[in-house]
Length: 204
Image 1 (tube, rainbow, N blue to C red):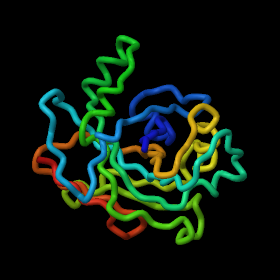
Image 2: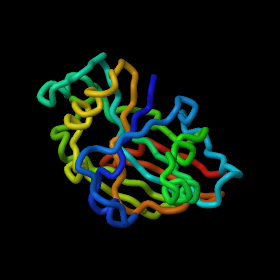
Image 3: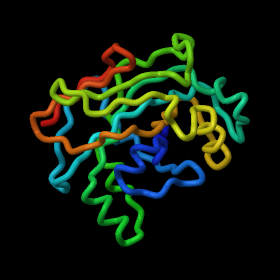
């Protein structure tokens, strides 16, 4: 199982981090050891002083595929859940300033909390109109809609599968909306699709 992630997929998030808008999807990966499941707590690592939350819709791949055409992409994922792409922003900024890869800033242990529940694709009336949000200590910090993505679900699958074979059980983190920010020990992060809470993570 692999975790593939889409960067810079919401215009407002690109603007808030003062990044350039890419012509094609930005892809990076997290190792399976990044997964944090069953609402386990996130333990703040000692190698960073600036961990940020990034809430994302997550696709679950249900079928092996390579060079998938966009019109067939919906056959390759069967459910959508929520994940948090925890990012060590200080490590990322340092690496970016030197033009170096920033895998350590994104792929450290526990950096990918994943919802306990995935909602079947058939339950969504419109995949281009899925509301989701992150609350930190009961306050809404991030909210987005799948229709705001620069590259929709089908485009992501088509693009990734040109380079990387997708396999059953793979996860695709589809990008984060604006509102990213730091987390602190003692925070409680709750993620929702529409008004259903799917994710509940304590920072310790």
